[in-house]
Length: 187
Image (cartoon, rainbow, N blue to C red; front, side, top):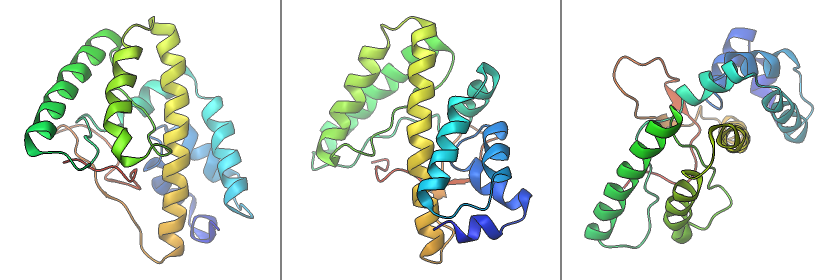
């Protein structure tokens, strides 16, 4: 249950919500509809707010996503992980060059041993999208990421910790300082 989020001041609630999605409009909207009786109500409100993101809100939220590719941990050799990291860096650079924002994909429902393949496959297939289609796909992936982060944030708060680890971002960029991240972590 989102007890701590319900009890937080509006500014504190928005700050916590910004760790889940970097759109200030989204965070204000979700915070404004408190209190939430349960996690399902909170997630429904978060979904509704995500569906209503303007193109500017989406750009703002995508700008808050981590810049560094995340290589999911799996039982692979160091050489394989290094090759995967190199391939991901190249694919991310091509994606950012084509679309002007970082690549986002939600891997919450993917088994850890399949995550790297899903990540590489996703970025490669989406490089062929036209910009308008990719904007829609990115918005949906961002919505899914926010849902998972919000659920983990609520679980972390319920467990009595404020959760999340510092996300790596480029120096000087304004990004949320901690995020209830996906179960996949950099190698």
